[in-house]
Image (cartoon, rainbow, N blue to C red; front, side, top):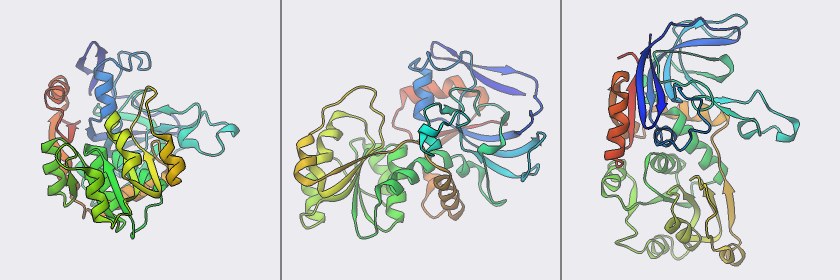
Length: 338
């Protein structure tokens, strides 16, 4: 079989390796597609070299079919279409209060252990979610990031009568916006990149470029002065942190989707003055994955428009170099059987 490995120093390689039988409680998947996400790009840039066991096969956004089943696995059959929820929570403790998806000893499959950018992949059976036979496996590779968006929107408590502002129109931002709009809420995306603005508009989303139009005034005018009920901070930059407390209305909820590795400045006075709430959101739970699967199966939100390109595994080095050259793209999929 063919597999890719990250070797460090912004270098990937394609290697030949033996197809391994699944261990007890594991399932071997014939991987169809594996998406490249922001975390993978961070790995490529060497930002996670202390965490990743180099050389390592990475990747966690995927779809595929069951190829072989290990002993003690029940409820799955060869040939079934599946996706992996790449959270290994076997280190859960009572102190985690039952929130296994963010347990203290959580291991992320595809980062802390081998991932999906290979032709065949052995994973614990408890990570699998079944797909319907008619599910498009290309679209199914979007289920993992879509589950992130579903989780974010669910934690926000967004209602159909409310207004949501999404700060950042990258892949996760647009998925959050699509899920939020699917609830019936009025959704406004803030984005400065013209290509991403165009993509959001193609998806039927309302977009404001805050460098050309005052975002707070725009939202205020659209809501008769009430401003946003929910703000999703997805951009991860200081201007987004500055505006999130301004664009939120009284008792608004701000969901922190972006990952901030360093302490940032936030206007805490606005939390006091408007009784705002700040909600942290990390990865997803089982119900979020099932909701994401249902949305992909339904396929009414234009997910296919988010797939920028599909490349064979053999092109992995060029794919990451191209992403560096063109960060405006949305989602690149690796065809793991090519």
